[in-house]
Image (cartoon, rainbow, N blue to C red; front, side):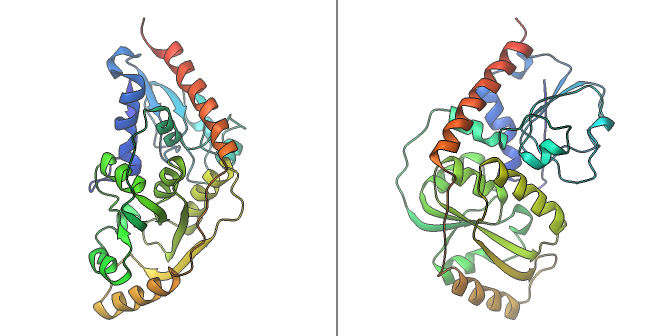
Length: 274
C-alpha cells in the first residue's frame, strides 16, 4: 500500500500526519495490497494523481471547483472531507477530514501550560519573526514544521488555539481545545478561493456555520521589513484581545467517531491481505 500525500520540504504536521497516523491505525503497510494508493489527509484530490494503481480516497478533499473525478482512473471513494468535496465527486459519501481518525487512538492526559497558542500556516513559518511575536503578545507559537507528536502535545497543553493553519483548527477541534481562525488576506502561496474552499468544506462537515475570524491584510509572499513587522505585531496584539473561540458540538463529534471507526474497520476487511 502506498500512502499518497503532500511532502513539504520544510515539514508540515498536517500532511505529515499521514504516515504517522495510518501506520498506527492499520499496522504494517506491506500487509495490504501492494498496488493500492491510499489518498488520505490533505487537499490532494486533483488530476496529478496519475498512477495506474487502484486508488482509495479516505477523507481527502478537493482544492479546485474545476476538479473532474472522471479524469482519474481506478478510483474508489470510502469518504471525502466535506460537502463541497462530495458535490464535486459525484455526491460521494463524506464524513469529515480524515485526521479525526486520531480520536480512535489511545488518548494521553496533558497538563495545560499555555493560555492561548497560535499555529501559523506552514509556508509562513520562516517568513515572520514568530519569536518576537511570542514575546510581544504573550501568545505561545506552535510551529507547524515541528514533529506531529510535538504539535499534538502543544495543542493539548493549550487552553485556546488561534489557527492560521487549517489543520491547527482541525486538531484543536479533535482534542476539544476551543479555537478561532486567523486569516491573512494576502496569503502568498495559494489563492483565496482555494483556501476558502478547503476551510468551508471542513467547516460544513462539522456543522460550523459562522466561525469568528481574525483577518489581517499582510503580504506573506515576501519578507516583511522591520517597521512592517512591528506594525503587524501591534495590530495582532490589539485584535487578539477580543477572541471568540468555538468548537463543533459533542454530538457531531460522537457521530464522526462512529462513522470513522466503521470506515477504518471496512478498509481493513477489504484491503488487508489474509
